[in-house]
Length: 454
Ligand SMILES: C=C(O[C@H]1C=CC=C(C(=O)O)[C@@H]1O)C(=O)O
Image 1 (cartoon, rainbow, N blue to C red):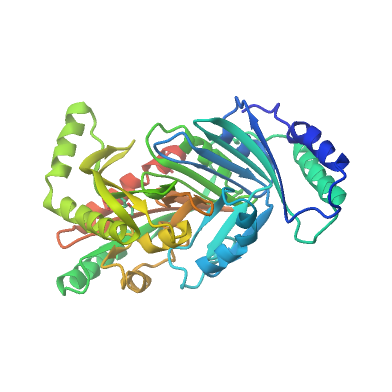
Image 2 (cartoon, protein in one colour):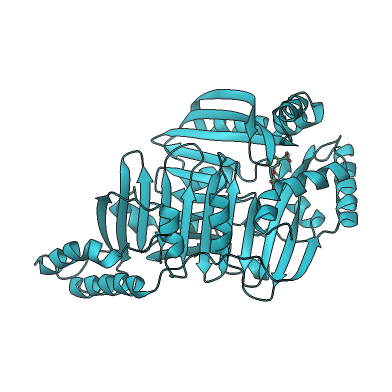
């Protein structure tokens, strides 16, 4: 990790110019200084190496766009999407292209579990420093929200102070080394998982629901605090087409993951969404891999599981868009440890929907909830022995018109000395508890490799 990058010198000239500019005395609501630049360091390295407690990173799976943030200019913690949009109204009235990063809980009506407390129900951050890279190049911006209507000189002094204190802190590198584990808990344990699946199968047989996605987690406790930076840096080293996300709220408290599933991307009126469901492990060699691929694409059970998701996404696309196209149907998506069936959609979005309203309309898709969608949250509350928090919920960035959200799967919550790793599996009428357990093990393999199979 490089450490020669300093923020204050980068913006000093602009800050000085603004101080000397004898314009209006009071600074505006938003002070934003933008700079195009040549950036040789990876954005993730820069974000991870800075010692500020709040930070985030997001890279989409199939384009060059990356977004990172350091510090907080404005954080909206809310109980509903409408409150979030209200919180950013003034910001986007000034400039509707400014991105904010965040997400919301899988089940926003459920009581928040203690380990998810810092995340709350909905949480989005406008960072003090925003770094992005697109096909056009890299850009770095400083944001300041002048809630207290301070005079311009004071605002600029505060910005300069924040940048200088960030620069004064020593840069961090991920601390390498194997964890000193104190405890490992499986929630649920295998016998309880088997009972959960059987219960879900009975519900499906009775005809109330057609598909239920049940999840489990592993909780690893260490003597010392986990280093989320080390975990996400290792995830970043995996070569596969998936969305990498990192949301650190406080020192040692972060939700992170490498999700193959994009909930949707909205760009200049075009909406893209993927349906991903149906799983096999990767093969031991190319021949074996091909065999497993053929098995997946010809399995009535996996196809049924996939088609609940695809049918749901397609129906939602027609509600939200005109000109809906199936870009590819039932193809294979190869990841490092597993392969999935994927169907991709595109459409022209209708202007009146905000990206957050679109995220709420899709969530939870039958890839992470079940089918039909309406009853699924209350069903999961009864079946699962833990609260999902932000696992399997939308996470990503948005501005007033554009957005990119991943589904927060293949993910983990780092919370001080505990590390929670999540995975779920779609249960349909032909599911088998043992096979679904093994599938969730495979889905956690990115983390198992990082932890040295603890
Ligand atoms: C719920 C998860 O995966 C979903 C996404 C792809 C394939 C899935 C499956 O085949 O069961 C799941 O629906 C997870 O990884 O936690």
